[in-house]
Image 1: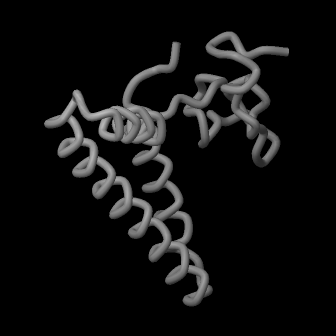
Image 2 (image 1 turned 45 degrees about the vertical axis):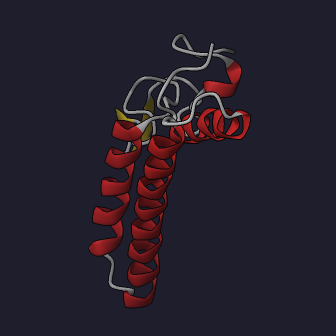
Length: 116
């Protein structure tokens, strides 16, 4: 079954495209797709998810797990920021074939634009 908002590949695997999960016997909005049923790549959804992960693990009693998760979230944000800077520099040389490849790959990873 394909989610209403996307292809089979874009379907949220947490809620299986329904947009809801059952927690504590009651339906809740899926924390991964925010009720859309499909995963949309991009900065806003990723940042919302990272904040939810940070909140969840900041409240945990396990200091080692909390430190590891917070480190990983910080590294992911730093890597994405670096990729945006690389993308900006490559856009200054659009006629260079290597720069075009880097631009395409960076946009794909960042999820800046929907794929056609």
